[in-house]
Image 1 (cartoon, rainbow, N blue to C red):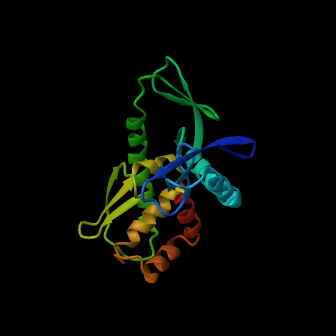
Image 2 (tube, one colour; image 1 turned 90 degrees about the vertical axis):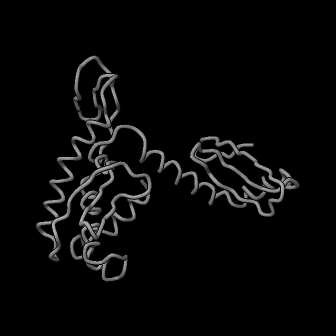
Image 3 (tube, rainbow, N blue to C red; image 1 turned 180 degrees about the vertical axis):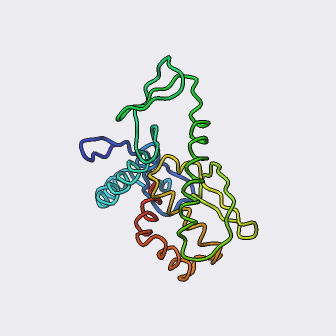
Length: 212
């Protein structure tokens, strides 16, 4: 069974489980439309259900396609590059390509760039922050579920290494967000007001970062 959308065919995978009472439609990371249902559910019922919810399923496909695009390839400061492997040492950028050797340590390079840039942006945002706060120490590490963390007791801010792949504006938003926690430890209206005072258009970046 397949579903056609925008000229592409997407496989429909049916998972029938014992004791399953309801039927659910999901689009997984592998871009397969997965239907989870009970053992006695007929294929005709599933076909009709997908047809009735076609627009909704297409939106789920669009969402997964966007997530895939936003997390694949070589990104640096908000721009995506095509990776070209060659014999040269180090790394060289052209307008839309990056040239590296097969043994180039991309993660190490990202960390070196992040160490310099993140500290620079921390200092810049600290200097113009609207409230007086202790100067925070900085840590950088990979995180799977957070863009930043603030330890209120030690005044330490940890930033996700992945931010080096995004436009600097997203980095600034995370820094301002975490510095605001040095005043408010929660996400109260007062906290968001402080974030807004330091980045009036923060809602734009907050919304977009949920798609990364």
